[in-house]
Image 1 (cartoon, rainbow, N blue to C red):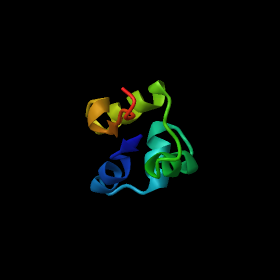
Image 2: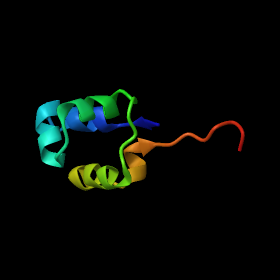
Image 3: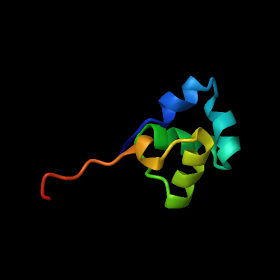
Image 4: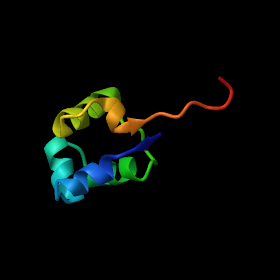
Length: 68
């Protein structure tokens, strides 16, 4: 799943550590989300959405597989 977390975080002038603290996760979790290695839980996706004041679908981009 692609996402805009890094773009939005940097747009606010935040370091990963600061953002992680604000949403109550580790810096490593933020890094993994930004690099697409980790898809956040629904609860964490809502926390990120609330932090940025944007709908989840404007932050996380889900691409359907070609089999549908």
